[in-house]
Length: 117
Image (cartoon, rainbow, N blue to C red; front, side, top):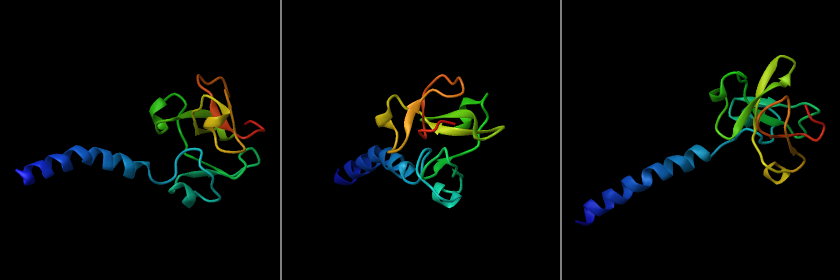
């Protein structure tokens, strides 16, 4: 009986453990200096991204090209290069030094540097 109970508990917590492991590592909007800081994705390290900004290249017309909680922004990495930016509701949702703003006619606000894009 105890063995069956332990197996049931392990199966119940397995999805939670996978979520915790998936949450580890860099995410869109984290600070960076090199792509390795972003798990091999893109590190936007420009004057408009103080402290760097982990991102990835995306396709504006494809909402699934960015991970959950982020939005594809045209010219986010530079002219003609779209990038994923962290979705926010208020400045408090962004890391220190960043603000929550609607940019490039996107449907939701994202965390950007104070100079904008």
